[in-house]
Amino acid sequence: MLKITPHLWYDKEAMEAAEFYVSVFPNSKINNVTTLHDTPSGDADVVSFELDGQPFMAISAGPLFKFNEAISFMVNCENQEEIDHYWDALSAVPESEQCGWLKDKYGLSWQIVPSALNEMLKDKDEKKIARVTQAFLKMKKLDLAELKLAARDK
Image (cartoon, rainbow, N blue to C red; front, top):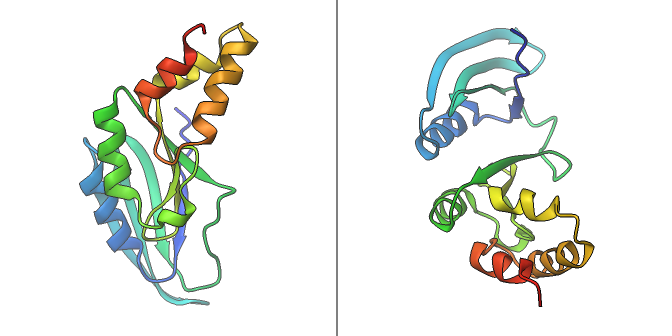
């Protein structure tokens, strides 16, 4: 079966980042670590790991590339407790927080969102979608109770 595996480039922190992410997400593990010698970046550690069953790769290959907000990983949460857990564990750059997006200590962007938000935004009621949108645009960490309140007919 075909799987798409995100591959993350770090300066020197691939192993440290993988260990951190594995500590945050349930059902996660580091599968393998290999050091590639004599690459253009010098020795490069390659880490294979899983976050809740999703395969990832990470490489420590020097400061050539940096993460930016064009790529993020979305974490769908069932309740406010999950939102709070992932937000508190991952958020490291408060000034970058907006609309459920955050940056971790490695500069990687994450979206911590309630699964219910996707359903709210699929509604056929355009006024409801507009209320929910205006509500989350004002938030940093998403507040599920406030989003549900905004979704109610006013």
